[in-house]
Length: 376
Ligand SMILES: [Zn+2]
Image (cartoon, rainbow, N blue to C red; front, side, top):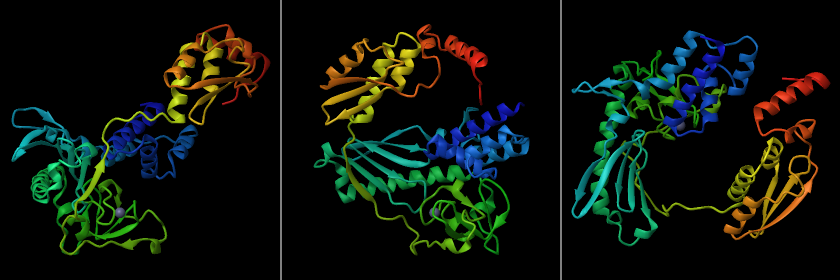
């Protein structure tokens, strides 16, 4: 396995982790890097450029850390290979009175979908159920009736228990049942400890508490991947013991009115993106494409789009016809300016000679080799 391939594998693991934890990719890359003893992903990449590369053991460690709980396949009674998360993802239609709804497993949460409402029971055993009512159904939604809501929550809780039971089937017995000294093993492997730490909120959790809460932080609800045997902060005084409510029950449901219609946000960022996309569409050569990418686009008073082009990259006499058409659709005027930016590459005239980026790059490499230097 080449070093490059090993880093690529780490990236793949991080992508999987991001998906399962609803994180952005860069955050999950940092989690992977930290797991291997680096401060950030950037530091890891820096080390990989000198002489470091993840060993087979380290790759297995990350795979176990990230992959195990989400990607252990099992076979059902009909010989079909199922993913432990996805195999419960079928939705079943249920009815209470005249109201029908579906229930399904969304990444460990039990979610009930009715007409204009959802009820979500988070995977963390003590977290509050979340009830969302579409504003358009604010007056008529059946979940406004506490009796109906309680029935739905009871059904969803039962389903949530099945989800969690299924997830913990892969765990060792010592993960859910502390030994005589209160020590438990992390569901994804390792030694047994009587004290655990949440890397999200610095909570200090006893073995009994973490097992009871199925490896979610009782304080902030962080999932098992964030529960470690060492505190995140080196200074012990920054951690704080967590408490589990005496009754050990879920918090009261949180009810929110939401506007679930898809909304087109015509803010500066989105308008700039559409205008830039139109500029790219009509770029005739590499220079103009660079010009479209680097143009400064701003929205003034929600009425006028200002486009400032680099005079080296976008021809002064070229009308951005597509961009003007897009602005007209959006009811916006366009003001154009030409200015001198710091061009990204020397010899801007080269970019007028081709529309192939490959060819342009070759010309740049040749020109810099002959008349300058190339640095990495
Ligand atoms: Zn926590």
